[in-house]
Length: 225
Image (tube, rainbow, N blue to C red; front, side, top):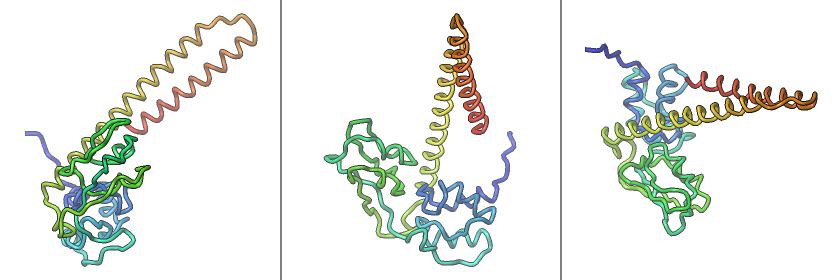
């Protein structure tokens, strides 16, 4: 059997977060927040969706005292889901781009709709909407972890991770296409006749611009990888 590494402290912390990916903690998602707690750069009371129970779970894991939720990060509240007023939706796709768990369906210039069972209530789709057609509607009377199940959290994390992997793959594919176009353009420039000193200088200028663009793209890909 392949060796399965023991979970890191960040892994164990992440398991205790509700996986809304809402960024209310001040980090880009639940995983970065878990890593920040693990390295001591973030406190355990920055997750409004987890609420007081979430803080208590983290305190127990880390052997720290239970503290109140930091009001700078928000307030504990019932779980909500996004609802789109389909009569007002203009199909701009900004909400789709903002959703961290792919819970919104639609296409450009077509009406969008939210898959309520998949929505984590992160609120991230509300601000980008240019026509204010998205409302967050409470679906529980309980708050914090009492409004969630572990299964919901696990499924939300899986969707978030799948989306992140898809976006990264699409970026790589787009970068590869751009590099191929740049290489083709460079070959085209190299094949240009040089009938005058001016034409030669222009060819060298084009070559330098394209080579610089290719080098920037190469460095960017290496940094991502």
